[in-house]
Length: 117
Length: 116
Image 1 (cartoon, one colour):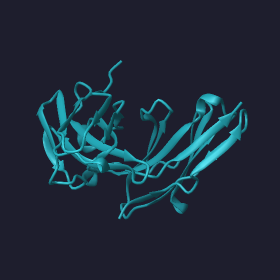
Image 2: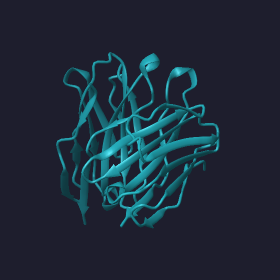
Image 3: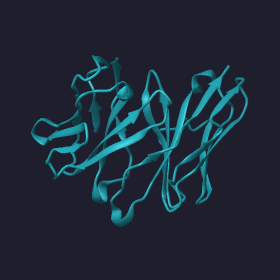
């Protein structure tokens, strides 16, 4: 069975602090996709990143960076120099790949990040 | 700027009434997903379609929920009769699956349903 666990329910930081959101997944597939989505207070889900399982290179996009470690089944997300606008719920998700890919996303429970001024 | 659109954005209804939610996927996307978000269950997949054909609706309560795609530009999710436990935010998402590999799903703004 596929499962995504985001153990941190809520995180509160002060602006300009760095913060890491943890994501651990379970799957029997040898290849798969991992995602992060952001849900700001307005409610929509915003796609942040997709990573396939055979690409373990870390990725950086501005203040965002992602650390994928297949050995520990983790796909952690770090925000550097956090800003108030980063306050949102962040979801990690998993889907299949290739012929086993139905496109279904399995979401974690989400981590609520509050960035205080 | 292509987006998934959903109507209505908010719906308040009384128990027993029929509710229909609509979704217009991004033009050219051939896969449509319906998700429900609640505090207790989080985000859960209800049903999805590829090329308008239903692929999986195992996440839906069959007795009261139905999902259809009358054409490539419209997906509907219907609840009849509605119950208070159906109160949630319902998201539609669309994606492409060229070469058998799904690209990222783009989500609509959601329909916030309240059943009294």
